[in-house]
Length: 459
Image (cartoon, rainbow, N blue to C red; front, top):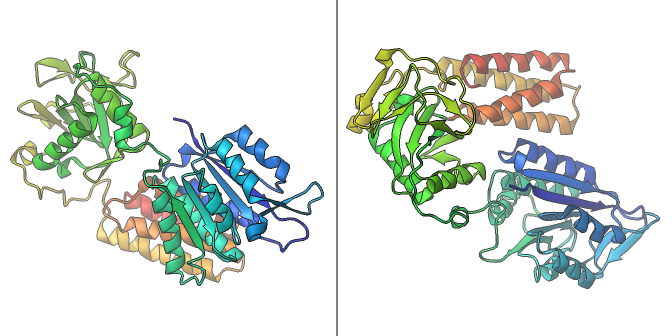
């Protein structure tokens, strides 16, 4: 899948009021670095943009989103630079023509400039999603609004959702300029990532049972959280998404819960495509960690019989045609494997819970996904101490304080969830360690937080 390219163009001619354009770019980049789909995006920034640079930039980079930040002059156009760094306006009509020529790749144009609604209205003739400003917009609002728009896109949300999230940030802050940004978007406008229906349409379906391999979906879950109605709902959902009514569950492995499935080539391909393009990222509230294939007919010490009597195994490989690796799971004692009909539950679990369909069968024991109450309270207390230390230090400027506080707030919010984002927590801790490593009074509190979270099995 090609990356979504965000082309950021900025201009602040010498004879205009200075703008904090670099700070805006930095905030956008920071939001995208934290985004769940960050690997799907590429940010390209060009400063001191001249009128002559526009066409070349769009031809060279073929962006999905074009973001302009600078001055706007309403009917007189957007303000770019000439060869001497002085003001040169680009008029609306030729700007619209440029986007007409580029609309094969450009899905959204974001004009973060004063009075840019004039250009946004005109560009909307050619581009399905356009953001502009109805009047003058201050630096603070521009920097607050735009990064949150991209943060939402980076988490897989639609253009409409992204605009609404960014507006909500202004509303929560009681920003008096909340009504300044406007968006125009066509009904049915393409989103950045393919919908489930569009992925399905790419794959013509004629059921053909896969003979050589099974599909494995790895979930962030505990085996004790699996019960019959839940598992049946998961399989039914996968059948609907894949268009393969023959899709069946043959085994559940412990560790991270692994659903091992039989099905058709086409059904497998659809599920794999949905996971890879991030349209299928959870099953009934349980995040999907990975998807891959295993062989059906490799004999091994832990080989078991599933369903139709063919021989399965715990040998895993990314490609059924490749050499098979040693088991990624642990060797299980014979007593830890149970079978119910055609489904095998492997590991330390009560098989009757899944068979009987007790929807309240959820582990109340402490495991690698759940922290004790005392551990959690210790983490929260340490985070509060860290926030206080950040607020009181003179070693950080106001921007650095705001940014590090954002990482602490993220951790504090996640650790109190039933299913914390462990990857996000780890990234936030790493960011704090890096940014505060040179501040002696803060390095120790960060280390303490990291140790307490590790103890609580959060990461």
